[in-house]
Image (cartoon, rainbow, N blue to C red; front, side, top):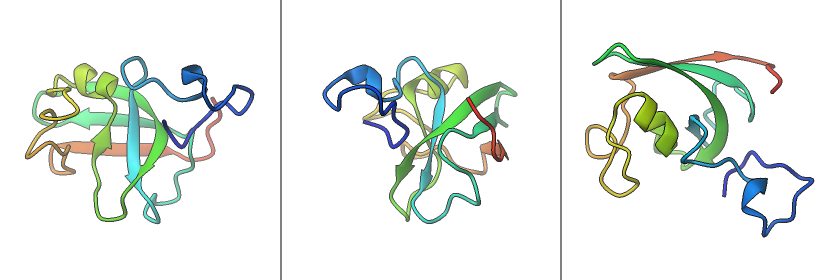
Length: 108
């Protein structure tokens, strides 16, 4: 389940939530979104291989953790995408390797 949801669908309907394997999205810590709102667009850059991916801000994570992304985002950035063992540097996409640019007040 993601914080960004389609409120017209039942809570038990998987299509209510953003699909991690289909949609590139980022997760920002609670209380630390730097003004970004759920649904805002982002451009994510992998500085290690030069890949650039468009994504959306679709979920809120713990306040002490930054740099999470969906499986689809990891795959598009050529980062290991396993929820258990993927990511970079101990399973977290670090800001040193990834830079996000937000377009505030975007509508999708």
